Image 1 (cartoon, one colour):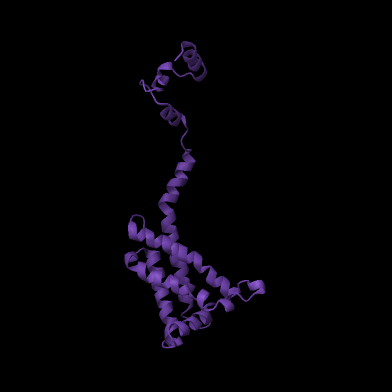
Image 2 (cartoon, rainbow, N blue to C red):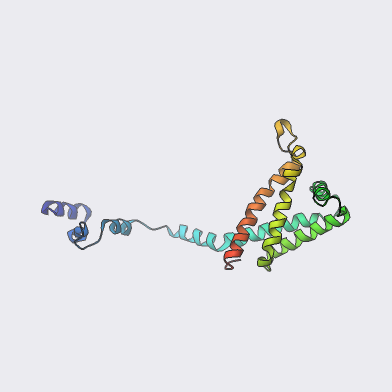
Length: 190
């Protein structure tokens, strides 16, 4: 390197010239390392927020998903209270070919949902939960295939209230996928 360039570099950057002698493979610090060494790190607030999210986001998702599933299941124990009761019973008649009476299907589904919800809330039995949760998630979306005309009979095929109720289940399905993936790969933080 020419001597005047070395002096200019030292004056402008206040970095000794031997630091740059690594350019061209002659020792010193390579330019990429110099750049990364001078880049500022995340702020302490960012580190705290990232740490909090890393520690609590999954348990929060798991517990809130459990509360929602438990709540919807609990409502099904009381005839006429669940807004999805008619939809559930109609789907039951089609999916079971009418072999499971409504008086059995609704409490059975309520029990399954409450057990799934409690498992998610408490974090117990999660490895056993993976397959029943998958079946439940698919079942709650079955009305989209079974009754599209009823669910999207609003103006310009907009979803009805029942359609919106089923569409929100897509979010529950996505949350179930996150929980199932985490449970299958890692038990830390469950």
